Every structure is written in C-alpha cells, then in structure tokens.
Image 1 (tube, rainbow, N blue to C red):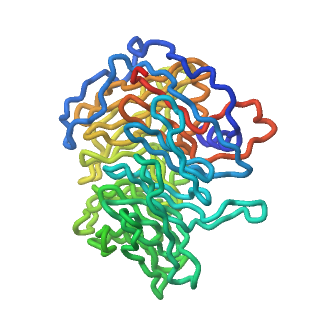
Image 2: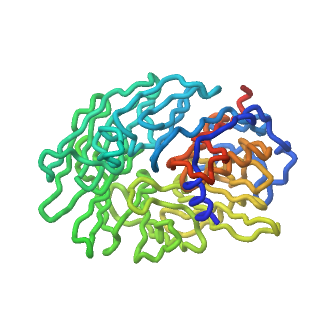
Image 3: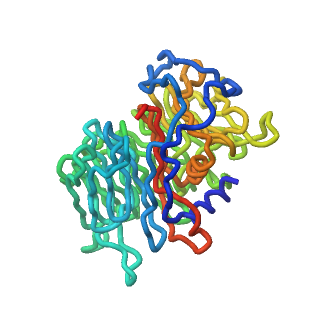
Length: 478
C-alpha cells in the first residue's frame, strides 16, 4: 500500500489550489481519544541515559493548520530536497531558489536565488544557523535537460543569504568540476561526496580543507555523513567485487581515525548515526522490500571494531535508507545506546486498519530490548529524531483522524501527545497526500512542517487535485 501511495503521489503532484481550510482548529479533542497499547500520557522525567528532552507538551495538543505553500510550476521531475527550522523561519528549497518563510504566517521573509536547482542538502544545522547545499551551475533548459551538480554553498538561515559558494576541479577528470551526489557538515567542515571523490570545505569561507584522491586502484569516497562526527564510506575493488570501508574521520584534515571493513560483496552502505556509529547495509541483497536494509552494524568509533551486528528481517521491521546515498536513512533513530526502529504494519484489534510499534536494539549486544511503544489501533508510527533521551515520533493517521506527534520517554517508553492534527477531511487529505518515503517532516516547539522532496509536472487527470509544497501545523496558539 505504501508503495502504491508513494507512486501515486509522485505522479499526482500539481499546482496547489485553494487554501480555505487554513483556519481550521481541528476536530475531536485528542484528550478524549483512547491512545491504545502503551500510549499512556507521561511527562517523561529525563531518566533516559541521554537526558531529558526539550520538547514540552502543550496544555491542549489539538493543532490547527498554520499555513500551506502551493506547489511551484515545474515542467519535469524536480528535486526539492532540503527544509530547515530556526526560531523565526521555516526554510524550504524551491525551484532554483531557497526561501525563508515566517514560522507563524508562512509569508516570505527572504529568497536566495540560485543559478540552478538544489541537488543535495544536509539536514544538519550549526548552532549559529548555518547549513550546506549543493546545486547546479545553470538552469535546466529545453535544449539541456540535465545540469551537473558542481556547486557547493553555505546558507546563513538567520540572515537569509548565501554566505559563500564554490566548486573544485576533479583530480581524475581534467578541467571538469567535481560532481556531487550528497553533502553534509560536521563541526567546521562541509563535506560533499560523489563518484569523482568529493571535497571538504571550511564552513566559514569555503576554503578547501582536503580533497580525497581517486587512487590508481579505483578507490574513492562514495559519500559522507555528518552531525556530531564525520564518517566516510570508501569504495575499493571492482564492480563485481567491491570492498567498502567505513572510516571515522578527523573532519578538519580528512585523516581516518578508525576503519571498519564491511562484509565482502556489499555494494552500498548507509550511515544511520555518526556518534554512536551505526551503519546499515543490504548484505547478500536479501532485503527485497525497498528498504535497502538487511543488517545494522554498531561500530566502535575509536577502534573500528564491530560492537554488534543487528539482523533486520524485512518482514518484521521498517526503516529505510537510500539505495545509493550514504546519508539518507529515515524512520530510524539512535540514542540511549540503542537503535529505534518501527515494526512493519500488521493487523490490530480493529478490523478497519493496521497498526505497528516502535522497538529497540541494544547497540552493545545487538539484542532486542523490552522497549515497545504501540501506535494504537489504525495508526502507524515512525521515529523522526531524538530529543535528549526521548524519541520524537510521527503517527500516520487512519482515514478519519489527523496525524500525531508524540514524545516517547526513553526510560519508561510511555508516550506524551505533543500534537494532534485536525480531523477535518480537507486537512486530512492535505496531510496524507505526503508520502513518508518522499517527504520531510520537521517538528519543534509546537510546530510541525511536512513537505515534498520531489515535484512532477501535473497530468491532465490531476488538474483538479489539490497539492502543496509544504503544510504547517501548530499548537503554539498563534
């Protein structure tokens, strides 16, 4: 069902029309709804190893629609990866631009025009609201429908400006510029990776910190993952016999601190977390559900030794990683020395819808724990991120309810409802038009933003449908 919905969303994306439901205050009072399973309300308490969370439950979690952004006109499939949140702005990639919107009203605060489309964006943001993107050097035209992704830049999300942008020449491609597939940041370093070997830059001014060379035997960095640490996935060997190495790196010099060799034959490895270091792979190509995950590997960052291997039966567990991207895992979270994953949907006590749970594995032993948070009848639930030692999760709603944001206490695993979206039909339709696999969900301080990552040219059969680039929900009382 998820695959069918995702495919439908990709085809049906069109220019949104009509925003009459923007002032909807929601339907049923969520306080009167039975949450099911272990979904009892809890205030947490900071008992989890990673400490208390910052997100607090409002007096009334019933949300209203804050604003919605219409889908921009596109003539072909267009990637719009990238969304970020500051204290005052919701920032979203558009068509050949990045735009900052007032967090309360959705009105445009600023626009950063770009020479071409954003082709890679990191989810990481520095303490002073800097983030990184990669973008094309020119716009797509009728005569040239493809532009290489060669430019790297840092955006100042607070000031609403492109702090700097640059490109570098590839060491193995003459005068051609390095082309990037992914970008990330860690500390004071921006790292962009691709089949040309990638490069790393000083986040302050774009000075090249280091540029890994493609060796004579064809070894190169497939990509990087950032955040609290920097990790590279380095590929050696032949197409038929690849050898991947996970390298924990010094972000300022590019020197490996430790290395771990993946099992022979693994063609791609994705990084779930850089600290603690957790990677995922499809060993033996046995994961046929599209998740690209058959096993997780918990690795000691200092020594490069394997702490634990965690099998992830595709029939039992959810979570997804990009099949060719290093840092594109979603619906997973790591904290408290544990890996949190959703189970696959299954029948619940209701005859009209499935349900699932969030469970965890110990990163030291690889064994499953007693942690279990039930989504409740007809809801399904996925982790979004950690909040201290708590898990922030999104509950996909049934056909007659709105979605929920919940905080799961990392110690007791009891849930606190932070937000319940309106059950009005028009609002539900807008919320559920976003596929989990092809959208970005941000939550912070009583506000949730859900946006598309890919736009398509509207078809004749979709012209009467309503679609949005992003929809915002709020319990903040404004």
